[in-house]
Length: 280
Length: 330
Image 1 (cartoon, rainbow over the protein chains, first blue to last red):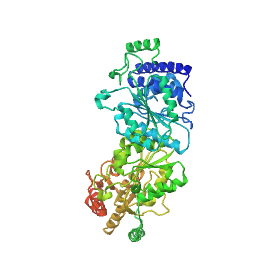
Image 2 (cartoon, chains in turn cyan, yellow):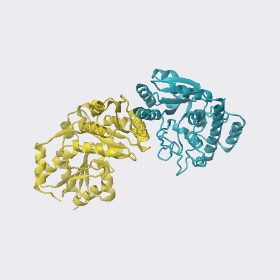
Image 3 (cartoon, chains in turn yellow, red):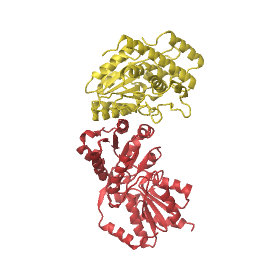
Image 4 (cartoon, rainbow over the protein chains, first blue to last red):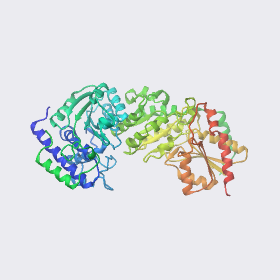
């Protein structure tokens, strides 16, 4: 069941709105991760508004699909998506990182319904996704599990431990993404500690691997459909992305990994985001 | 309060008609019985299922057992995911790996989100023996105790381990249970009821109280017998829950006898001795001596040789009791 033109149009508009809200939230808060939130915005949009089963009124609904944001620093993306999906009020977004807020600097499942598990320390989310996928297998339940990793995150050894586990247990109910934006805090991933060839690595670990443009919603939705048909192994969708995608102010700029826009930068970005859609 | 001649007799008889079981064996049995009662129980191991005795569960319930391989960090994360998925996971390997290699996973993926994961680690302490210091965990209690939400239990014998495993299964939240490799004397009968956070007072004592955990409880009881022969009445408390500590029992012992000795098969830093010292310093300052591994790593050897080498034998505990009594101001 392929995505329709109408759905694609709606998804593109959703991704645009999500980027706008992320930037407003980050500017208001003055603290948080801009680049990696924007680079993964299309992936998260496709997951929450095309593929995943969930009920915002019942975050612990048994039949829900599970999403693990392993690159937890993209919390502003997750919170914005959860607001658009109806888990939280839009107004709560402006409490990001403030004392007493449920919107912690990195996602905290103790406070925020819709967050499956706290993340933030890189490299741990895929193991958790494996565990949830195993639980669904034990229950013979059709639920699917999704995880989103960063490319820099692949430097963590635990990721490759989890890669082995997922293949060993034939977790075909698991589909993970690498947000391959090429940048980490200290600079280009290739320069800090190279992780390529990413696709060959996952293939060698026994995964079904798809390599797509992570800003092309037609490709992302098609990859998600394809992943559901894979039997006997997990799927990794490696997404070529641009860090800070959505505005020239942030695109490809490593300094916006953990920095937020000024009011002036926000104004420029808002103009760009309103004038054209950010996705192809 | 001195309980009289009968208690001493009982201790004496215990020395002769003693049954012995390793707490890891009791753990394996407890898992099987738990697995029969509860479908949601799942068990993970990191290639040590023969040693940790999770192999017993694996044999009984192969579909609910996951051998993750020599992969401790991923094992803890997978356990966390199974908990998110509604299961009751028990994850096991040697204590040094479960709490050292995977500490940050225990912190971030288990304790921080407050998930219902049970970590039961075996081969704790120096009595792993011949494998040597690389495998002798003398820091695990300290590094687990410091984690918010974590419950830390060190059972003294087989029957207490059985009950502790049942108790942590009922308790909602992260738990660390420390079990050992070697057979230890059975101290508890069927009448005993283990409760998380509740100390068991074997003997109240008059002159000083030994607060012990794990295999050191049996040593403490032996020390009491040794001291009795010299006219010293030392109380013995089994402090199997290190966190939350039974502070009421600690303070009562301090007020009753005015001197405390702690005994643990662990570093004197941060474990039972540390926990008791914190309570005493704040609530009932009295002289105290800590028996344990004195800020050093382990070494290869046999159990009895190592206990003597590191000053953890009954004789060492008895000497510490006499030392602490001398420090008393009244």
